[in-house]
Image (cartoon, rainbow, N blue to C red; front, side):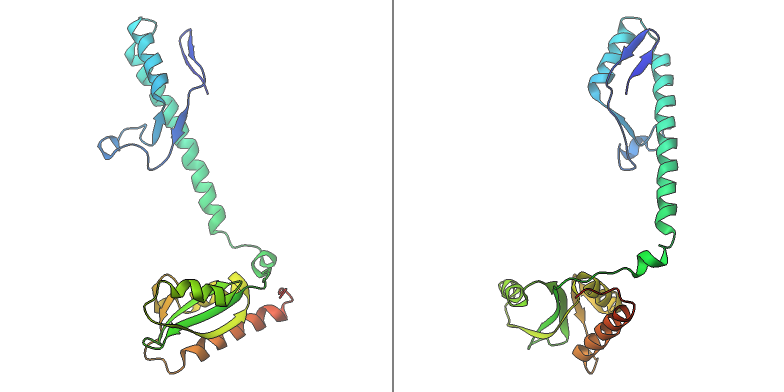
Length: 199
């Protein structure tokens, strides 16, 4: 963009906008959230020093510009949030395609109720990789094909039991592996019936 100050034009000015820009000290300023490159500011100061424009003219112009940018970005941000909050069309929601990746559940004999639910193309290789960071032996408890959609569904189903990352605490549950299997079966059956699966 360019900035016109009287008869002088500052070409190719980089103006940035973002809610995280700037410090807290000037958060209440009308132009808060907008940044302009330093060389353009130096050129503007040179024009003030030369008497081509006044400091008040420069300040007013910059304030009007940054307020206009902020209003536009706020409007676009609000429109984006509205679009995100609208429900997806039914056809889009239900069109879920699986791949051949395995969804798996692993735990250790020492802590059998602390279970990791993950996804991998090669389970044996994934367990081998995970084992390098575990002091106790990891055991495969369950697996099924379904890829990332199935993994995401299981994570959502057991979110209340999530301890960190992909690990879930099933302590006090009589059959955690059976619970996982039943939840996966419901998901796979539902989408198989809708004809949306490609295994």
